[in-house]
Length: 130
Image (tube, rainbow, N blue to C red; front, side):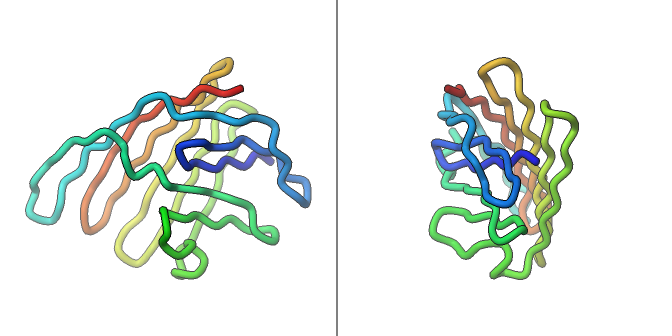
């Protein structure tokens, strides 16, 4: 199974009991567009990239910056793997849900973020892997 963590630097790992890092990726560019409950839209460079996904005792946790992990917040997380190329992460929580899709091409990784709930957000990003 493949595990990915994002955080400005993010890692692609294989998990067989313990996570093993096999690549390190640096975010090159990205954006996020969102609307709040009033329907106001805004577009920003993706500055909230302090997101990390990691394997924790056989389950997945996700962390936004200094916030609590998803498991601590009672959120549900599922991961779908499509071969070695594409990974989809679904995060469900009380106020909505978030979907991350990771797609690998050579030494680049493209990933998108789509959130629905109290506000909607969509982001698209690309990273360089070494």
